[in-house]
Length: 172
Image (cartoon, rainbow, N blue to C red):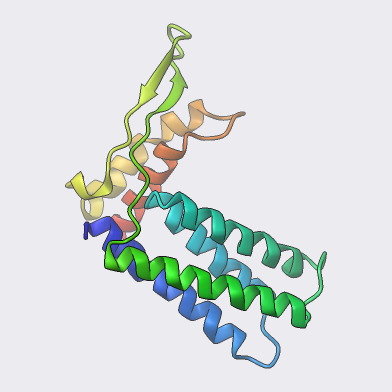
């Protein structure tokens, strides 16, 4: 298993443990549940587990409605959350056992500001990076321009993913 897969499994287990712990309370806090589901979704996206990210997104959206007060926390909602959590636990176990593999690397199209042509942004797997500590944070700062170029449109997910990976490495 690659370092990013190991990191994903570790973080996913933390998120699922937080969900289980909160669900064991008499009155679970929907904001805590929502944040844990959101973190799990984000981690799955960064690690390129699209199916797992999609399932976590469904749970996140359900919990967002409850956290905002748009939906109620009742037995049916709790049952849906518990079912989704069991499914996610099985998917993460599949990652640990090597039955579930990350999605293939993709190149995201990006418009070159100078020429206006569409180019591909190469996704760099985090395990190939040698940045640690201050160097990782310095590299993260160099990505600021690319993110600012994307202002007004959705930031390129590969750039944003690398930025967050670098910041996490810098805080270890």
